[in-house]
Amino acid sequence: MLDTIFFVCGRSHATRIDDAVSDIAELISGVLQGSGIGPVMFIAYINELIYILEQFGIKVNMFAYDVKMYVQIVNCVDTERLQGALSALYDWAKEWQLEISVDKCCVMNIGAENCTPYLTLNNSVLPIFPNIRDLGVIVSNDISATTHVTDVVSKAHRRAKLMLRTFISQDGNLLVCAFITCTPVTRVQHCKLVAPYSS
Image (cartoon, rainbow, N blue to C red):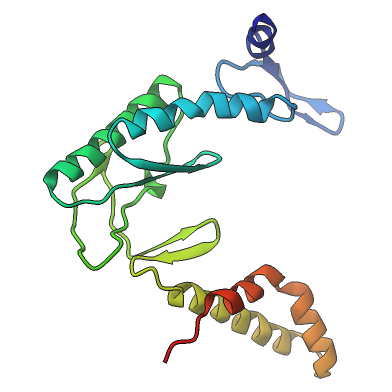
């Protein structure tokens, strides 16, 4: 344990670009990056947050430093639980000197029973959105893949039109090869997998 304390205390940082080196700055917070123990330390650092939020009866999912909270809102007590969890999140971040990007936070109602809870984070009212982009996928409040598929297809059409205008050659094989090379394959395949047949 003492080795870990020495590993995180008394650290400094300097930035080097070619032969130029910046002044040395003392690091007072954060997790050391670029080391084997860094990811483990980050998990230990942020893991407490899950337990704090679950005390409010909130389902929590995390990916790196992104936090998603889920709760079924039946009445105003559920809204108060969610607001309490948001306040606890803010207090935890403030204690650990982390800044929350409130402008990237929002609320999304999922399902037929849409309510409009008034939720705040750091005295800022959280907007309610019908669609949210999460890890590159657009999630809709009706849990439909239509918005995401439409977005991916629209981007593919724009890219194809740009290639048709840019390339002098109109050889179909060359254009298909260029399109496949310049279009992330996972997005195209994702549309094929996600777009179920509907009549």
